[in-house]
Length: 97
Image 1: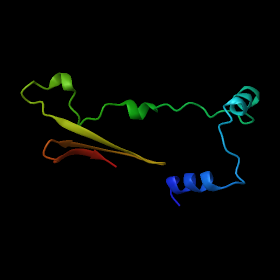
Image 2 (image 1 turned 135 degrees about the vertical axis):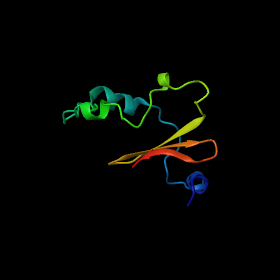
Image 3 (image 1 turned 60 degrees about the horizontal axis):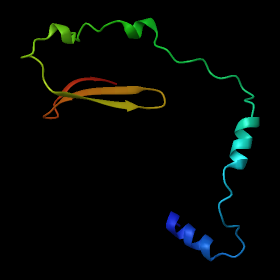
C-alpha cells in the first residue's frame, strides 16, 4: 500500500488515534537521553592520501589554453569511494576505483 492509501485507510478507520500530538515527547527524549556508547573517533586522511599524485598536474601549472571543462563523479559506498573525471563529450579523462 502506498503512502496515499495508508492515509486514506487511517482516515476511514475508527480505532486509530488521530490528530497531531506535537513535539513534546520528542523534546523530552532529547533533553533526557544520555548516549550509552562513546562516540567514534573523527575520520581523517592518513599521510599517504595527502601526497600529490605524479600523474596530476597542478592547475597553477596549466595554461589557460590547456584548460578544459571537466566533471567529477563520485560514488561513495560503504567500503570504498570511486572517482571519475569526464569531459563534456563524456570521455573518461581519469578514474580511481
